[in-house]
Amino acid sequence: MALNKELSAAQAVSQLRDGMTLGIGGWGPRRKPMALVREILRSPLKNLTVVSYGGPDVGMLCAAGKVKKLIYAFVTMDAIPLEPWFRKARESAAMDVMELDEGMFEWGLRAAGMRMSFLPTRCGLATDVLARNPSLKTIQSPYGDGEVYLAMPALKLDAALIHVNEADRLGNTLLRGADTFFDHLYARAADATYVSTEVLRERFELDADTAKQNPFERYLVKGVVHAPLGAHPTYLGPDYGWDMDHLKRYNASATEEGGWEKYVAEFVAPGESEYLAKIGGPERAAKLKQPVF
Amino acid sequence: MTQMTENEVVSLAELMIVAASEAWRDNGEILASGIGVIPRIGASLAKLTHSPELLMTDSEAFLVSEPVPLGARGDYQPKYEGYLSFERVFECVWGGKRHAMIGPTQIDRWGQTNLSSVGPYDKPKSAILGVRGLPGNSINHINSMIVPNHGPRVFVSGEVDMVSGVGYKPERWAPGMKQDFVDIRLVVTDLCVMDFGGPDHAPRVKSLHPGVSFEQVQAATGFPLLQAPGMGETPMPTAGQLAVIRRMDPHNLRALQLKGNPPAVRTAAAA
Image (cartoon, rainbow over all chains, first blue to last red; front, side, top):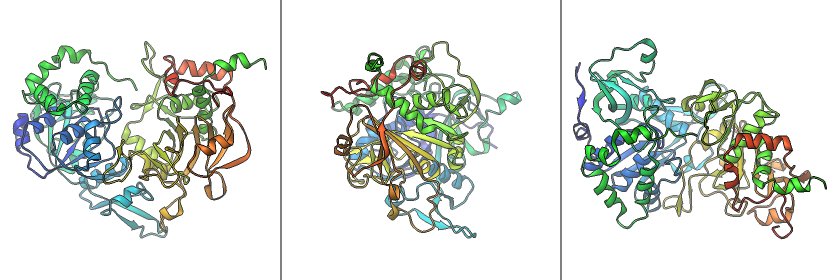
């Protein structure tokens, strides 16, 4: 057993390969592993198949031309409903897509985690999700009802990226937000899960109530990256809210001439410590309001 | 016409909220999900008036015993009664215990909806959000729709560009696929209230908003409409309903939902 799974973000990203299928945890503008995404933007990694309940993670990887294929149910930043760089990539046919119902997506991750080839569902039948994805098949119940289901194939991931509130060097994690979304399923679906964390501990010593915030087992975790404010500009309950000013700045990059290159030069290329300084550091993060829905 | 003075200040958005709330009447003990300002206030109004048995969430992860007012909450504390993470919402969807109202980009004569993309699928003219949960919602539980801009761009003449939510088009259903749980209720627009209750689920107008004619609705719709038996006028909000609406929407977000925030009763000139 590795007694210390700590990696730098660059070390974690260096374990990824061109052409990999990469799952990204969180949901829309919520608890995205953005520090790891920024590290991918700094890397030469390319031709990725990205599997995500998408937010700016997907948009930024699209803007950087890293996405060969996107597997998704939506891409949105909620308060800014239309994700600008996802739209550009989609409208210019710059990537292949597999567009799925949110529940089919979950089912695909679950199937992968259970080492099944597929799981049956009604979701997607009689829609263009079925018509536009010729690889999707149906299957008839072998029982008396004979019902025909969609056989949702496993969404097997080469790697998953997940951001958590707290982790220890063994790969134990805690998610403290009101909703942990589907991150446990990404971890199970992946050959290797890389976790970025706000707080890194030597070893957890937890009371029982806190231990219930542990979303998945440490044997799923290959690397732990200490990345304070690592979900910024998305929000991390209960630690900090989303940074609407920053999301607007990012959104505007899609309508400026050379906007993405300027965004990268200002926020991404200089490195993560420079990024944190530019967004105002922990002092400003502490003032970011939790979104009210 | 002693009510005229009061009616003049009632907005079309408020009339649509009341019409929307009717979608959840007599649904039983299920989750009411009103997505967007008008549907959410409509669901809240339903729970606070005719259907207290409805379950609602804080739109994040908790069930609340009292609908949460929209926008910044001040010192209001949500009244939690349970937990409903996204994962549990999906389970609720698959069990059929939900009635959602959303605003699709396109709707066709078969009740199919599109939230994905407009134009050719491989290179769309406009990429929107993605199909989201529409395929699963539409095939598993009750659904209603909100349309703030009734016109032929929403109510398309052919099939929607990317069928995200299922409907009643027979050719879409292969033998053995279970259509029994498809249940499209109301379509609340800025002109009228519609449903799919005609022969073979044909779309029809249930009620016209004050000052709107059937011909006007038909002209703004890309497919033929029927008049439901007893098609009348959409009821104006009562004083009691308006009081609940104001309490649920203290920042008046409803005033931003329709262009120009028109009154519920259209003047002859506006019509």
